[in-house]
Image (cartoon, rainbow, N blue to C red; front, side):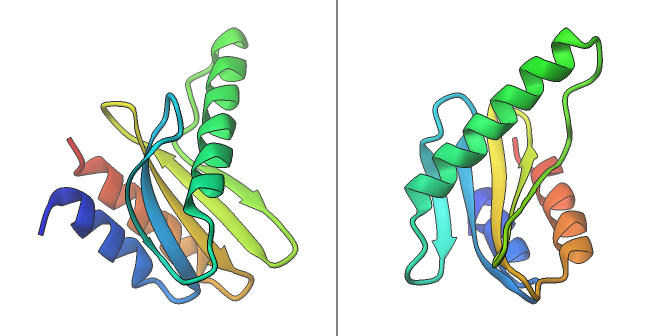
Length: 115
């Protein structure tokens, strides 16, 4: 199993996580994905890449460090993003019932091991 597959597996095992993706932070292209049926991975990837880029620019201009974790909450769940090295971003799509604390811990652990 590759590092990317291991990271996706680690995240999708969290209760309430409906899928995970590894994307390019620059252009939002999907590198690897593990999603439930009915989830549009390309749309999630584009949204997550845009959020991470905008927050990175805003914090940089404010003289702050770039965020290590992004959480976008919606009515039926959340999109979580953890920027990593080499322009990779680990993204998770969760339901409203997800264990978000555990998802965050697993994502930060997984993304820290990606090269």
